[in-house]
Amino acid sequence: MTRAAGASTVLLTAAAMIAFAANSLLCRMALGAQLIDAASFTAVRLVCGALFLALLVVIRHRSVFSSRADAIAVGALFGYAIAFSFAYLGLSAGTGALILFGAVQITMIGAGLINRERLSPLG
Image 1 (cartoon, helix red, strand yellow):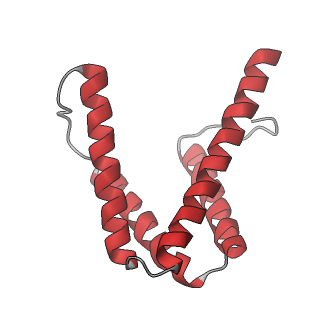
Image 2: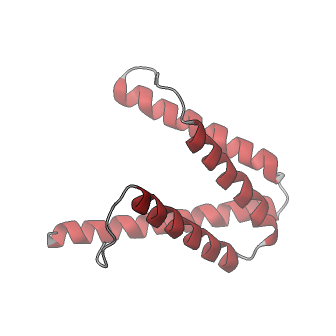
């Protein structure tokens, strides 16, 4: 990996981490102030996300996305979204971040092992 690619990776990783933290804070602000209930909040997030992704596909490919949805992926996303929406009501930010970090790492490593990818200390 070149030095420029490494720097780019670090900057993109930092930007993603900041975006995730901002998302968490915004979710906590909406749910903590009881401006919306957790189920409605999840529905709004998922519908808006789906509409935005559909718009991106139409803009990029100049056509409507026509492949079938992956039911397992849809279910996993819904489960993640609803669990965290309700968790924001009762967990502290630190505990929530720790659970999310652990769950993401387990998922990524597990998927890699299922796909027979080798673990490497340098990524």
